[in-house]
Image (cartoon, one colour):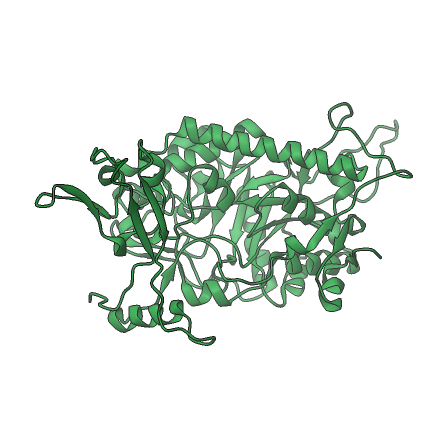
Length: 501
């Protein structure tokens, strides 16, 4: 049913002195915002269709277009905001749940911005990363806590399996279907070049990627899409997805419009249907059940590949992580409520879960108190925006971070949050061939490589300023953090002192 009360969120402003009627904006917009009126002999726009993806603005060769927020104001008050009213109008017309994309956009506290980094001065000199070696290499997996030697005095190497990262940054799980094949190819190529890992997400592994298995993490989720023996032969690690930061407690969702013949073939499902994963793994109801699945994954991989368990950041995450560490998992990934998604119920995305900063600090402290911190590595995701966030996450106890939205931004994403439509004008969150070709893997890979290299250089600069020359020395070193504008309880959970103390 048509939503007669819908208001345009944006206005398209066209400078008629600059516009030469080239129709480029009409060609570039998959949402049908721009159109040519034969009677008026000029280009017009339907603002209700605009999602502010900025494609027309960026591609306009005369710079004739700009998109602004609609200045029209509804009659609001402190309780009923325009957004609340518009959502009710939409549901009254459709009778369905609201779906959203990307992460939680609400104005809630971003703890990264309330944590400041320490710096060396006189008594603890800084390190110059341009002239002295800095170690950003990370090994993810269980760690041995004692050095063993044989009868000849030679070191006995730890037989635990690890993932070797040249930088403490991985690419988050984003399924084939949620984003395009070209986006996946860009991520994989960049992972290879930078010595890190690309995660398939729950949509399965495309056969054309099999040759690059040393940089691939495959995911096993509740829907078991594409889960068969051959994908475990072509990966470096296996991830069991229990939860996701953008939608804790429910399964994944791929809209039918994005489930094309090619996507359905990889997922081994019927095309043009909604692909909705169950809310839970029907064989996991306890930590003991999880341990059985972890052991099964290790058996399948002949104990040669690390097993990751991914969970959403929720209120009792410390106790959950303690159980996972005892299940035999090698790596725990915790996804915060700012984490992105291709499709999630709006109410779940915006109101369920907790910030990744608080979850990480709680988990790291709990595992240390129980003496099991070295059994697992911690990877965090869900709201990592820049290299400073990476450094702060490691200081709070993470071994590495995983980035999704930041990676998509490097590929051209403009956060229009319309991924569910399948009309991504940047060729990222779409399966339409004419749109997918807009993202070329060679260009996309280069963008991502530049991003990771830039962040890695900045990480070295910040560590050098602290007088620290390795990620290992930074891990869990909360003395390198100070709090600003946080209350006593927040400082206690984060394990940091207030600035100036």
